[in-house]
Image (cartoon, rainbow, N blue to C red; front, top):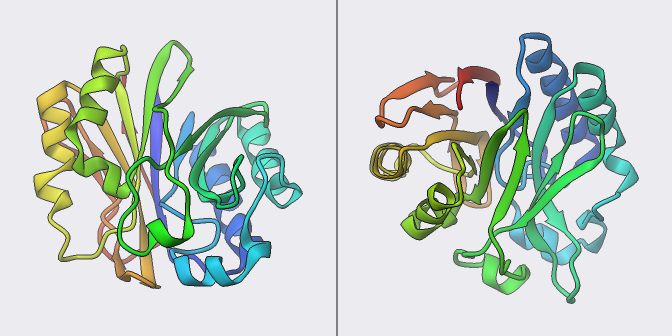
Length: 237
């Protein structure tokens, strides 16, 4: 199983532009053999909680037609994509939601970030259940940024038979998660950890890139570096 970890600089509030970029990355990664492509937190809109709060039209539906280019890309290369954005739920606030679009373009799973951070709690609703999906016999767990500070998520993933833990995040260069969180979760629970991160300015600061993957021994398997948009591939499972 080959997984692609992506990084790019989302355009704040421009869903169409970000979908176009993400669809192109899915097609490129799928052409190189990726079966799953992982994107950063709020990559559909940019990490802009205040803008999302003030712009209701940025909230998407699970079956939103604006996501059709991503569905088409998944079908074209037979890959799944983990795309994250503000998605309407049962209440008045959206979730910070990972939608897993399957290789057939259908919705394979939904995960709403469980642990909200800072201003997020004023804009979004927290999720209440863990995120899971399976593809080609490999079981995956989903987590989003601040979620990863809570080791019980990874512990439950391992206990639930997951081999791969997919982390959609927004991290700056000064964030210690690259050394103190992701490799530790991998090593402590015997998981492959795959990180999608951002580049460019956002409401939280400046994205550091460094998307990639860690093996169950905690060692780096792939690193996209701090500057260039694109993806890296890692063999997992």
